[in-house]
Length: 152
Image 1 (cartoon, rainbow, N blue to C red):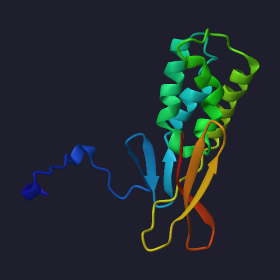
Image 2 (cartoon, rainbow, N blue to C red):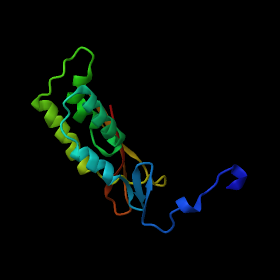
Image 3 (tube, rainbow, N blue to C red):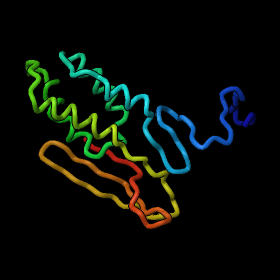
């Protein structure tokens, strides 16, 4: 490591742990999951009353979007409030979208770590306002496991 100018601080090292925190996620031999503290922040966030509050909440939710299927489709009603010439007017469809994102993140999947010895499969979907895909693999028991979600 020293030859490549890489250094480890033993005080920051974690050895023989079943799970370790890495960049806002938790990694274990079973896969990658969202940080439960961040999920709790999102879930306990009150309904936004201003565009600024919505942007703050979406900033945190966007950080965890990789754990949510069709994230772009879920946030679309709220995104429409952020357009330039749109006056703030929180409606039931915005609340439904807000609650749907909270629910989706609260039940977020553990993403499988990619196994390059197994084939990857891509599942795609599109609508009038969003496109999405999921990379999946079959695990050793033949179960379908999601490696990653992406949508926009």
